[in-house]
Image (cartoon, rainbow, N blue to C red):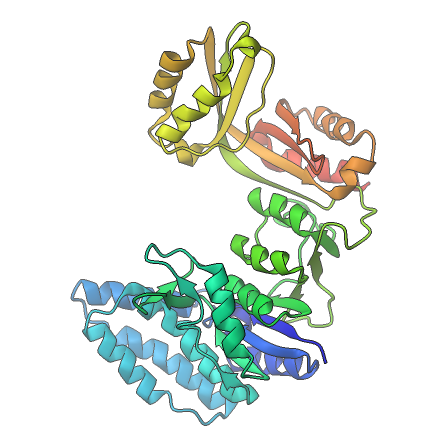
Length: 438
């Protein structure tokens, strides 16, 4: 018998109907032994996620606004799920504890974590699995940073005692104080990944409301093709450029252990979804794996005659950004030019300060600033084996009357990145996708 860790997101545990689907999925494969669940998500348009309601409860409590009625809405929803599932589990004492903690001024992390906590209690009772709390198992340091090795040791030791278990996602605790600490939103993906590594799973299944990844954003490209297989490296590139199904940090624990991820759809369990695996463990004969992009960026270009002869010139430019706490995305260079591509939001009100420091430290002949640039990445292992991809991209943009402001291909040849004006973002994405798939 193998081992699969399965994580079910908020839409998958939203109500009794969805939970019945989960039970059928789990019972269809006995290898699905360790289950991680989120807090209930939206049941319909206009509905609220439980975690959002819990944050609201805490905010009202902190401002001395009555919160009991809002908390009642939350507990009523769990009670309705319990009734619909027909499980015999004591939730009243849990509600009383939460109410008491709110009155005592509990932390925001504690109250936010209760959504996953109550969800896991219910699902464990429904499946007949052991409930294993992640408090004391998912470990953080005093600055709220996840401790992956300490977490792996604690989880491995505890889960070895349980043949089948349900765990809440999203939270753990401070390794020294024991206080509840939460991951960033979407953190249940990370919990699932940590659990998969701890039990040395053969597969980490991430069940959500989509049937895997698509080769482009369906809001931009009509009916983009599904991605059957993709490497961790390709996924990282796409995620960085805006494609979002998995929490970014969810990839690293399973990648470290060589465990593949399967993105599946709770509402269409017959769909195979997308397999995310190691770079060399599948034959990728596709021209590319996907397209993703984001905006807006600002490009600052410094011109200096004989720049290439000045040792440390790039370092001085990057030191300016470091001193101002600004991260950059790309650094295209020429013999006498250096460009830094920065998310416009990261610059905020610091653009004038950056330009002033560049003038003082770099002594440029000229500085140009180009705002409102969109970056589009074409990603795929197949790019290295196919000639003329960049030419097809540039021709597609030329045919569409789209001006290219930047073109860059990394030395790994896993991606080609194009910069266009933000107003052309959607048009450019469609043109590139059509050119490479037709």
